[in-house]
View 1 (cartoon, rainbow, N blue to C red):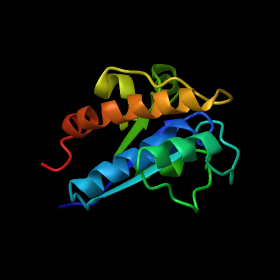
View 2: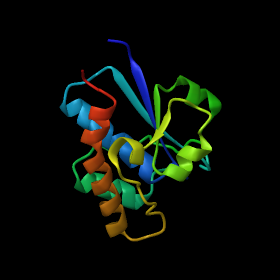
View 3: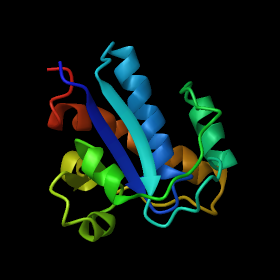
View 4: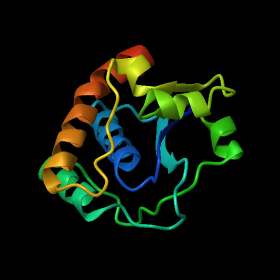
Amino acid sequence: MKHKKILFVCTGNTCRSPMAEAALRAELKKRKIKWYTVASAGLRAEEGCPMTDHSVTALGEAGIECPQAFRSRRISAKMLREADVVICMTQSQHRLLHKFPNATSMYELAGREIPDPFGQGIDAYRITLRVIRECIPQIIAALHIGE
């Protein structure tokens, strides 16, 4: 099986995309699917920031491993070219990447946009993670992962 790369994209790469990265990685591990690399980046990310505390808390509460070494990254053309699929959290983010045929969105794959919880309380992060996790089976099915 050819190794494939999935890249999640949001704005700052400290909330949504790293939570999606961790959630999909956990689901692939649970299903014993090993030929995928999952990463994340942000359209306007400040390089080197940790994941927000609320993101870490929400992942921990859900029993999802949070990489301690995570640091935000700004998306680059190289990342976009190297990914097999680029999954944006919103349609508006996808429109910014329309020149890349491998770019799509959570809405296109799973019928939901992922609102930004940045600056809100922990409950907003829990809801965001819940929505992401609800989308994961649809993403796996849409991308034919594991087939």
